[in-house]
Image (cartoon, rainbow, N blue to C red):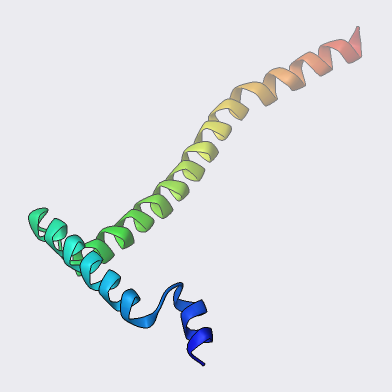
Amino acid sequence: MSSGLTRFLGDTPLRTVVKLTVISFVVGVILTALDLSPIDLIYSARDLVLRIWNMGFEAIRRFGQYFLVGAAIVVPVFLIVRVLRYRG
């Protein structure tokens, strides 16, 4: 049982607890110095995903707009050229 737990944790349980305690303390000091909290990080990640999501749909809307503006010129010119070649 102990060897399975040790294999899972990557070290003995006591050493793993000590490592996690030290790392948690250091990360806590850094986050406090930056005036961040875990919930702020979660909200920031959520806002990032929402901004990327919204930009994606905005890009699709702009693509469609550019496509329609370009097609308003290209399609009539194409048809005129085809008609003139068909007669000639």
